[in-house]
Image (tube, rainbow, N blue to C red; front, side):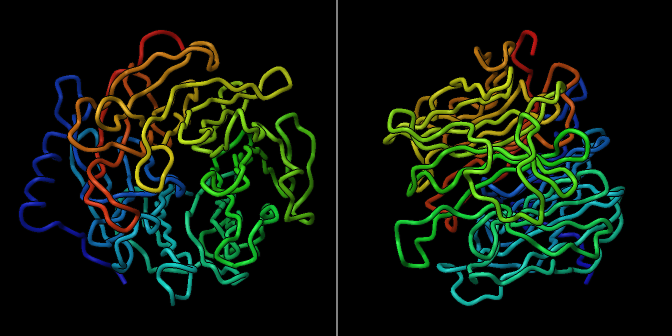
Length: 433
């Protein structure tokens, strides 16, 4: 099935065309403020946006349940907006993740399935691709995955490592789960990366749910930052592992095991920030690797109702963590409003925190490996929230500016939102780093 390009009707179309028209047009040739569309995304599926050449490609789930992928040309201001999967219910977990692999643009989506919503659905991870330089989308395919505990899949994460395109998801038992392909058609047998810790509840719906973020590592590797549960219901710690070939390593290079040993236990991994009552409960926001090969993690620690953004970096044979800022107020069931690293230079990151009456997006830059921070506002004096920001993977901030995309608007929960995904290009904070 090859869908026609999706156009938004009526007033929404007029608004988006107007915003797109101004998108390429500042005097210094940087795109101005613009909207991708009336849509949203969750924290844990990535990449949500990628950059290559003059193109920025972004996936989001429409307020009407459409899976949307926008291809925006920052040179010309031209945009292409495609509906890539059949329309589902409105749910920010359904957001498509995007990546360019071997000359093709891929979009992956896992319709939110499992114990709560929707109650009866055969869970699957769907994907399709088109040439990165344009053309039609190919047919929808499904990744062959196991059924496990029958709790469904969500949060597709895509990482290119050497000849492999890895797909990581929250798997059928709500554990980190992965497979890979070298040609976009044939997939390796899926495996669970790490087992959940023992739960304190017997009911299936109370299973402990680890959370993970993944990124391209040095050489042909993948790096991952993980929590051993959700901080709302578990005394979580923060962990790290690197995957290269069919083996797994700690940050110091020690071998933790091979794929034949999977699933590992959390106690086998690097423990970056252990839970203590004084420190709080950790939750990974992003992971990346610096130019010197050192892994970097941005994460939060939740203590009572106080959430704090932190920055961990492996240096001098140990993990060192520094405070970035307080996160501020929570948004319905969430305990922070999101942060992402600049994968081209993880001395920079973007986050959302409470400033005045609402959550605002800011770019942070460290000149000294996380000890101090300099800040540039992306939004200010907003009428609604601005949350879950990202810097497009592959975007290079070489002219003193950086690009960020984020969700803006109002929401009651992950199924009830009236939001848009916004794009901004702003100056980097001054100074080195």
